[in-house]
Amino acid sequence: MTHVCLGDVAHEIKQKVPVGQELPTVGLEHLDPGEVELAHWDEGVETTFTKAFSKGQVLFGRRRAYLRKAAVAPFDGICSGDITVIAPKDNLSPRLLPFIIQNDALFEHAVTNSAGSLSPRVKWQSLSQFEFELPSIAKQEDLADILWTAQETRSHYRQLLTACDDVVKSQFVEMFGDPIDNTFHKPIASFSDL
Image 1 (cartoon, rainbow, N blue to C red):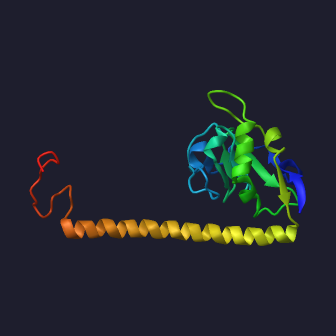
Image 2: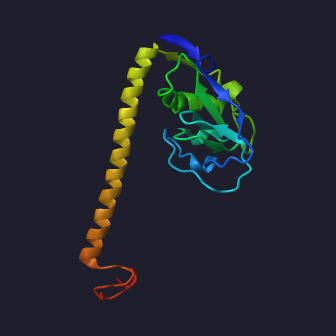
């Protein structure tokens, strides 16, 4: 393992979007706290955003870093100026970068190094100084395989919970009727009367 700074293995992307190009748009509101994958964005909307990003780069919410907003981009797009776009250098697996960014120690570093009182922001210069241990590129790929498998399992589990919730709701309606329409014509009373 090698002791590195984030700036040794990744760099900030500062690319502007070509005029007239329509791409999906990502703002801070689209980054879900603690999530590695981007699940929300806008398409076909007018925006003042001009910062470009590419598929596989990490979008880091630099404003209010305590919210833990960072996700890997699944497509090329445009993002807010309050998002730092981060790409790996040759000595870092692109598949591992999102997990290096989305961890407690990095966010603690980001919060500690944020400036501003009402809307604190962290700069890439401060983020790039975050120190950690980095294994060989082969081991990085092994770790990325494990972490992405865990991420996929987590995603499937979340889908299962949503499906179970829908089943419980439908069972309730089947047993007691629709509470809004009062399908079974049950007497209605307030809790205080009961």
